Image 1 (tube, rainbow, N blue to C red):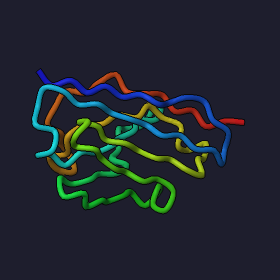
Image 2: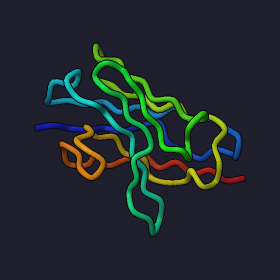
Image 3: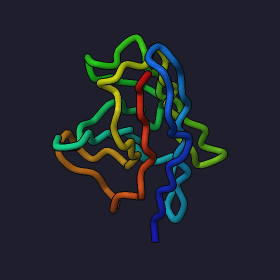
Image 4: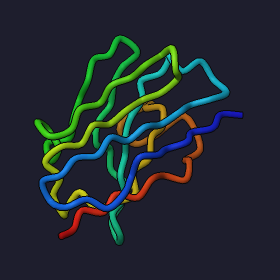
Length: 118
């Protein structure tokens, strides 16, 4: 059974940084394009960034230039470095294996809460 375990969230002031991690078990991690998603209160979950098995990256316009996605296949882990955080980045962040813009491969994990507030 595939498990996705996100961590690294917290409370940070505007302009601050956080690094999220997601450890994936139960599958061949290196074969998948991995994505970071977020869901703010009252809003739909959205794709923030994705990284292919060849480490080609793609970002939502709202985070381009501020967030960096990376992966370590030896550790079955995908990361999201978030800099210059804004209050509108406040959300629960999730990782998953990207299938297409509307679907993911696996059930969602518990996510990690990111709150940007002064």
